[in-house]
Length: 520
Image 1 (cartoon, one colour):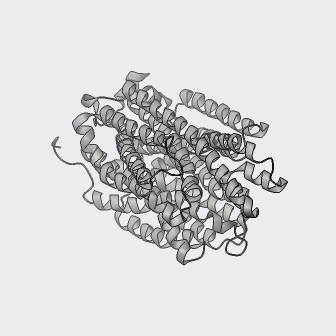
Image 2: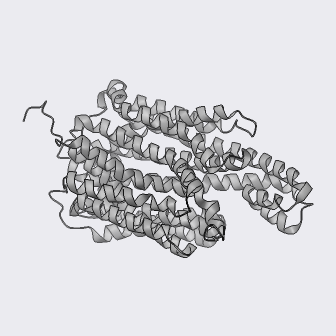
Image 3: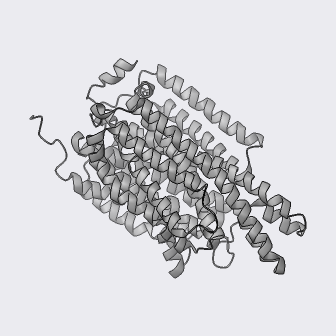
């Protein structure tokens, strides 16, 4: 075979389009529900869900999604990636239908958990198939398009959710998934070729079970701690238990003759550094996105649709820069591109430390554009580095590890940064609560949403409470943004120290894994 011959699939760009459709619906569902929470809490227009039930309607999806990503990536490598993608799409569509017509919060939470199962089967399969149908020389560009689709879905979720809620009932935010999934199933069946590991060996059942138990326990502890505080023993039992099981998993995999994850990979800088970088960036970014929605809807008084539109510059930047990042990596190297992206991301996240209730909204739009630009130049080179550190037949492992780290880091970011936000808010609002009735004092002291609800019952005293709540929230937001910026800045050190420079950028991993042998 000529060294210049393209080894990619003849229909690879059409296949990429199908994979993007499959991916959009999964990532979209991570953000679209947020704008429907107020409606779901309404006993007339929604399900009358309590605050805890609303949180679990989001977290049941995230928990199952993160816990099963690694497992389905491994199983897809063995059973067939197209088969796993089709199974995932069917499950996701069925669960979306069940969510749309749920009659109680408990039914919605259960249906969302099933959506997490489907999503966990879909996402790693999309990246694995990209690695198998594209020539290594085109893979970076394809991954750039894939990463741009992720960013687009994150940003348009609130916009689409706001539009649907203005014209239809709350179930429409789930029902919209069904026709998209049906189209995806048809196109995957027609266009996407089957691929799997040609020498799968024995299935590492015990290792897979350890990974699931460890990840679910750790993620549950993170989410539950973010909801109810980290002072309860159950939270630390879950977190420490999850860490212990994952440590057991690593030790077991290190000694196994047929590991589902070769832990020697983490001795290879081109694999370990971008995984760490992705974790740090998503920890910081998802924490900021969590509080920015409250800032826009409560402090600034925007509707869900208007809030979604403010996130659009993030999507525009993703679409503009993510597909071009592969060219930038070839020209300047993965390290330089990633460092610039990390600097832009850290600066944009830190900018929220200077934003207040009177900041012109165009400043916030610019900040989101900078964040989108930065993340568009982090994800593609990081993902390409991860995937190129593995031979093609092991692609599912790389994508599953990358996506699992991203989901767990996002949950931890919301939990930790949300806890910092809550503590700062309570410290700021407490001095103003002494003269309020007991019920209003409890609600206002818990959160800015509670303060706005309490203000509705106070009559002439309401404006004073709203102003105090806004001031306390903005002050807490500043500290939270500073923490997020520091976490993102830590990624700069990782990239400078361990990512390959220009000479090492974009070089595909050899088929026989000599890197790993040298690393052990």
